[in-house]
Amino acid sequence: MSKKTRNTLTDLLLEVDINNLKEPEIEPPQVKSTQPKKQVQPKKTAATPSPSSPTILDIIKEESPPKNTRITVDLDPETYAALKELVEYTGRTQAKLIRALIKETAKLLHEKQ
Image (cartoon, rainbow, N blue to C red; front, side, top):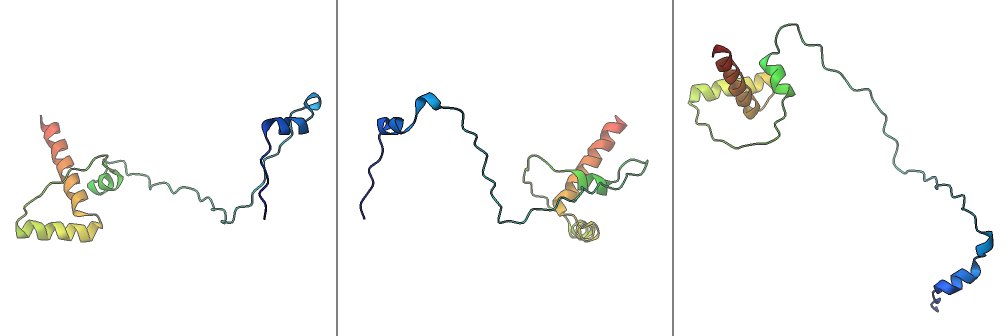
């Protein structure tokens, strides 16, 4: 198998008629995707909140902290058992529950001042 020599720029220019140049009408190639198209489903809107203030559970569901800071909390056995019950009841993590508790406590303190 012999290698083809590459055309130099001058060889390519000789092949092109410069006087009859016009902008090429290039259509983008239509590529069929091998993956099936995703069906767009309408976004589900959250249930309308009740006229009263949002509950702690609603606040927990909506929050997504931009930064995480690790802390260690020492809990007595009764408090830990209560926290585990809340985790099972709400389906949220311990961290989210503690975070919501801290926020609600801070909010109550600000209201009293």
